[in-house]
Amino acid sequence: MIQVKVLGSGCSKCVKTAALIESVASSCGIPVQVEKEASPQVMMQFGVMRTPAVVVDGTLVHAGSIPETAAVKAWLGGR
Image: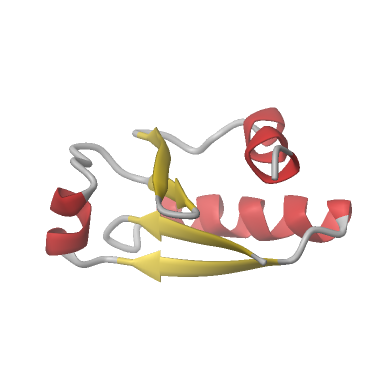
């Protein structure tokens, strides 16, 4: 199972990012666990300055906007 963290304050972009990842994973039949993380300490640990940010299996893969569907597929499909 792929572990995904969406880092952010819980704003609408963060919520949409989490929903997009869950939707793409579901449509591709890829098991994921999506966790929303609002802790400033966790964001600093990954060096995140802009949210929403996405961490896949412990690696920061995106920050600052809602990702494109193709990017999400690449993150999940490359496993």
